Figure 1 (spheres, rainbow, N blue to C red):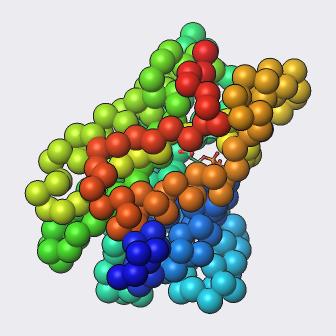
Figure 2: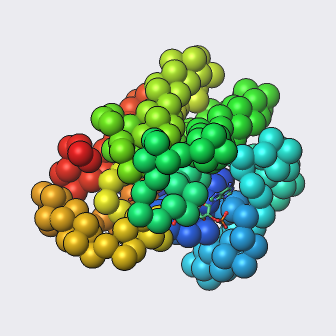
Length: 262
Ligand SMILES: NC(=O)c1ccc[n+]([C@@H]2O[C@H](COP(=O)([O-])OP(=O)(O)OC[C@H]3O[C@@H](n4cnc5c(N)ncnc54)[C@H](OP(=O)(O)O)[C@@H]3O)[C@@H](O)[C@H]2O)c1
């Protein structure tokens, strides 16, 4: 392998959950640029198809899988469809998560039990289910593997906008470190990224009708700009590559210099 090839993903097969929009799409496209074949999994068939077509247009192989990754049977089917197409899986990016389309915030006192369950399912349970299925396969195939989880800067301090979101992301950061310790002996690396202030439908949707909040957020970012899905995608490519071969259990903050949200 040449010196620079260690930063690439040539001949690797990667699943990106939620790779049809926002940060996940940025990750899927950056992984394809780095040479990977990419499986894009999300619920809305049309958006998954668009993402897959963009990757194919770059000359890479890509697979469309319509799945809700909070459901175990659909996760199992995602793994099976990937195996049918590629025979193997090298990288899993657990990007799915978010705030269930909330606009303007949903603090603790306003959150229902269903809302709480939904936030934990989409962020934390999806990560657990996909990781379990991927790890089982990697151990069966006696292959090294790599997982990148999607945490958030909201993992480390009280997060008051959306009840349960910070809790779920703290869980993902902890699960990342726990899995790294347990799975090292199988040559499986597990890391996470913790973005903040990345412009997607999630972040702009939360404060859509509150331009003053957006302006205050912008002022708080040391680098003076919002982040892009590509900013996150490039870090995920690095973590998934051989260049990061001795990194496991880490959570890398991608926030333009912001160190806490509140
Ligand atoms: N934006 C930020 O500033 C920011 C900051 C920190 C962390 N994050 C994290 O980054 C991740 C992506 O956020 P984003 O801003 O890119 O969100 P987004 O624009 O809302 O995109 C979410 C993606 O996940 C898919 N998805 C959602 N629920 C799903 C499910 N149950 N099963 C399968 N796919 C599902 C969506 O497609 P379908 O709806 O078609 O399924 C879409 O592709 C999340 O984990 C979020 O918490 C974002």
